[in-house]
Image (cartoon, rainbow, N blue to C red; front, side):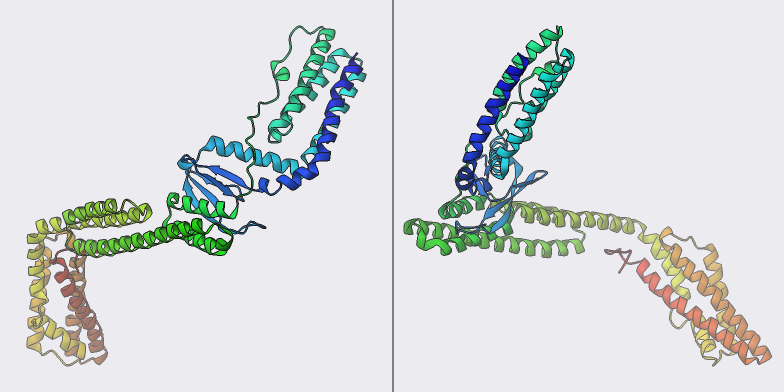
Length: 474
């Protein structure tokens, strides 16, 4: 009984496979080119024909759109980016499975299924020869599980035939389990083959007119302006390429639509270019003034102008708003620094005034240091006067309240005093001994002191000026 049933299971499969294989050659010829074209179904009802599978990356989808109207050979394509929310995913995925199923069949699906069927049949024949009833059940359950997986692993190919064969095997399993004394069995092993959705029919390859019409209808849906313009220009080229073979009235209307869309794209691009130029100039001037409210008004104006342009360039407007926001943040920081400086201004001016008296041009200390540097003096009287001025500077430096903002400035002043003291002391010693090398040593110290004093004058001027962008003062 087991041998008879196993033969009954295997034979219909093999016969159908052989018959199907004989028809595969003509099937590949008639469906091969159509099966190389996928379809992307949009939520608005539009259907895109593409010679390559789409690519989904997060919330965007990249589709290769044909831009070659000649319906012979592999067409030229251009990549366009669509929002994933624009896609009818159930229809698109179902059609992709249909195409893959046909491609699998054309690539030798019948032969693969025939080989698999023979393998299953061989297993069934082996089961019939196994003396142990429990082992027969185990092997037949394993064979059934493999058969049930075939459709889901091969794009639903021959799903109906697999289901029919599974029904026969289930009857056989029930008999074998009863013979083996089993009262229960695994639901996982007796379940039907994985259900495969009914495959939509593979559509024919798009004609030249289909490709032009598709590109025309798709262009307004493409979010990237450069992609949209490139697609429109490619559509115009397709029309010129195939105008002789298409309906003249249809071509005339299509050309007018393409010209209108291309003209509109250039017009909008110029409008956004003017908006960007205005925004950059306006925000630069307002930023120089740390005008926070003015920059906020510019941001509102950019959004209003974008609305009047019907939000035609979302990426460009996002970049513009990003620039305004960055400059607004910088202006707020600059405004805070200005307010802090205004509050601290009296203290800073007091400090700068005290120190500035000691480094003013023409002061006895500076004149004496110039003479020491040049080894041209100073005379005893000027040297004594300079030493007095330096003693006064050291006294003021010890008593003066130093603001936090002037810490670095004060350190420069102290270093200048140290070098000036060494220069004057060494020069006086050289005057007593007449030692020229000692005079040169004093000259070097005087040069260093003069350099630091010049730096100090610059730092004092910066200290009392309002802060500018990039630093405390300009």
